[in-house]
Amino acid sequence: MNKVFLILLILNAFNYVTPQSHNPDEILKRVTETFNMIQDYEVDVLINVNVKFLKMPDRQAKIFYKQPDKIFVESEGFALLPKQGLNFSPLTFLKTAHTALFDRMETLNGINTTVIKVIPSGNNSDIILSTLWIDESRNLIMKIESSTKPDGSIIIEFQYSKIDDTFYLPSTMIFTFDVDKVSFPAGITGDMNSESKKKDEKDDIAKHGKVTITYSNYKVNQGLSDELFKKETVD
Amino acid sequence: MIITLVRIELLKIFKKWRTYIGFIAISILVPVIHTAMYYEGQKSLDFMTRDLQQSFVFVGNLLNGYFISYIILNALTIHIPFLITLVAGDLLAGEATAGTYRILLTRPVSRFQVVSSKFLAGFIYTNLLVLWLALMSLGLGLLIFGFGELIVIRSETIIILDAGDVLWRFMLAYGFATLGMSVVCSLAFLFSSLVENAIGPIISTMAEIIIFIIISALNIEVFKSIQPYLFVNYILNWREFFNDPLDFTRIVESTSILLAHLLLFFGTAVYIFKKKDILT
Image 1 (cartoon, chains in turn red, orange):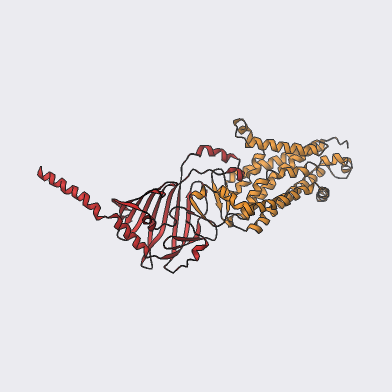
Image 2 (tube, helix red, strand yellow; image 1 turned 90 degrees about the vertical axis):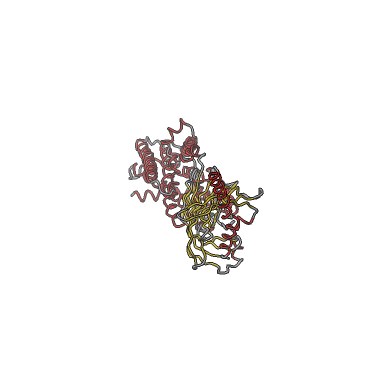
């Protein structure tokens, strides 16, 4: 009986000790420090939008980023970018008061990740809860799942490539998000044919979207001027 | 011979001031729309895309010549028929009103040649009117607002077409709009062959188009069964050229139906005119 009690005590102790070895605040701090090595970058992007109600060709653009949160998008033609996560930086998670909790270990696409839940404190943040899958060996966020107040949930999946043999930056980001029930003012476009009649049947279908951004030709820490970001800031 | 007859008919058409009403109306209306869009276009565009902007950041400008031309074509293809009937309704009935039928038919030409030349002249007028609309809206629009991607907002889809993928669609759309307007011309021409006063065909054609448009727009079960038989239902199918991918079946079907209507109206007008007892 005593032996059984002892085994249970040891197992229980392990249960408490394991989470403490994955200190979520420390992990997030290391991720931020890794990201802080990048002061600025410019990168060519290929944007693929896959939303049921939206048909558009793939677009090319150039994104300029400068710490802490300056972003400028340059495109020869018209481009659409997901509103959430475009200017993603781990700093945004730590800028406001939050509580971080270790959740579990999980293998994601063959990479061992630590799953951390981040709950913003107070009522000012639009994010209700974020779950982060972090590759501790490289201090990189591999996946984020966020629930937000106005826009529902968003999942961002990352793939990285090593730039200049030093920095890990995303080579692909896949955004999966809820698109609000969209209604279009048909009166303006003058549509009054059979298409509009189908609308009623599909009006309540929740719409999901996927945007894949492929990054190439990174130029990191080139000392981008602040003037560049005064032209137009996308937030 | 027929070319000479068409030339004479065109001369007659362009000698009447009412012929220029359509051109003047387009010349005034299109720049007014351009001016309004120049100042308020972005607001309209923002309103149209407000739902999309909740999820996406827009980079670049969608307010360009193509977008304005699309809006104008959408708005005017419903109203241009009225401008066409002013001329087409007068083609045969005008001769009766003026009392020139007998003089005309004493010439060494067949009735078929007379009626065909008049119809061809009306057809050319219709083409010129749509061409003028294209020049004014697309030409002037591109000059003022420049080139760019075209956003097409439908009742349940948004299509964004690449700037290089738009011009040929407009060319085909204007071509299709010309066919649609030619059907209107042939209908007014048919009514014109029935009466001896030009007012009747003009009002009859307008009334028929208004009634058909209302029936086409109403989402009532009884009307749904009638709608496929109304030619106005197909006139606005120039929009099909702005679909991605193109629905060839629908385009061919619409084109065939409009062509069939055109031939039917013209054929009936020819038959009536050949059998007509000329008393004036």
